[in-house]
Image (cartoon, rainbow, N blue to C red; front, side):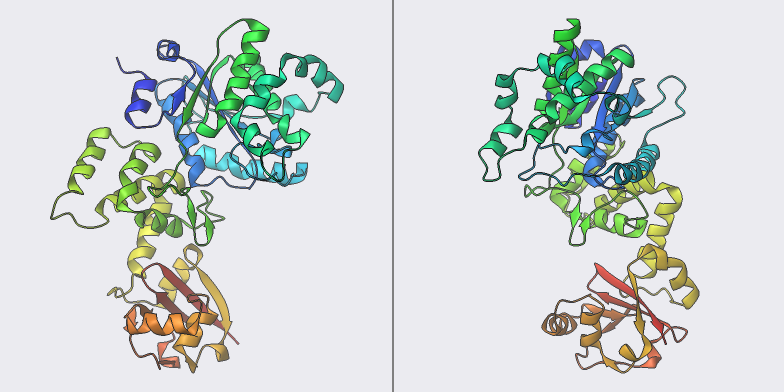
Length: 424
């Protein structure tokens, strides 16, 4: 019988486990936890791997416990960081926690009949510790040798900036998290990215020292592109999961545009798609008659529906079809206004748009970096006004281009679009 570990291995989800005993352990219901730092009021696409890990465990009847680091977020995890993080105050962290909870609720089941998802804030158990109390009760259980041997510590100690005592102690906090959850919630497994291995080991060692019992860790590979770069970043920044920070349309579009070399891995890591279906797409992509972006569209639909819901996906597809350059969709003010919240838009003065040269408008609207870039794009047929291709580099934007005398849709290539609202 396949266990959760077998399924995750098949999907390329497991980087390392602390012990193969975990296969036997997970044949019965267990509790598994993963931590999320509240450094922003939304998680991003890279964090979705961790959420999916918890969700897969839940699908096998195990209880997922998500820890939002209200306490550890005040310190900052040095793992994978070349410089110290900016410390956050309690008010900011509380605001961020609310946003992160919504991201988790979109994927995890908080009404599961036997394995209801749990969210906890580690500030709740750290707030009562005094400095002396923590050093006496927890600090004495850690040894400097293993702490200094951790890769995240060694790397930073060799850097020009070095490492503060505050960051050095981070592993004692995360280690204590695992001990506290083991004692109060019966959590026996910690899940984390490959950069969390040292922190996870700190927790399993602490539990063994205090209780003489085993606890386990599972790490997953960090989400990277085929070229080694971190996944989940665009020219505009992080690919946020919250619709308040990134519209469902922009989220969907990012996934539609991923490289062929990355799409199958993302299907395995970020969706619940059956492996047989994923292998079918992998085979299709090698066929001569494969239609480009077919796999990407399936990927984008699956993840957008999960993160933004059915309505979010419907909106993303509607906007995509409605404002596609060259689209035969007739644009009117009502349609554009209904889509405005789900696509990039800006307000500009009437006089700064009408009777303006198109190359100047492309630069002022932020769609092109320079007039030279705008001219080259025009010559190559990559500029559209209201879905109509414009190839005249001397084009002047007359009022005949305005929709209801107040809206204009510009597109620079297939990726970058801007709805301009006129005022004054």
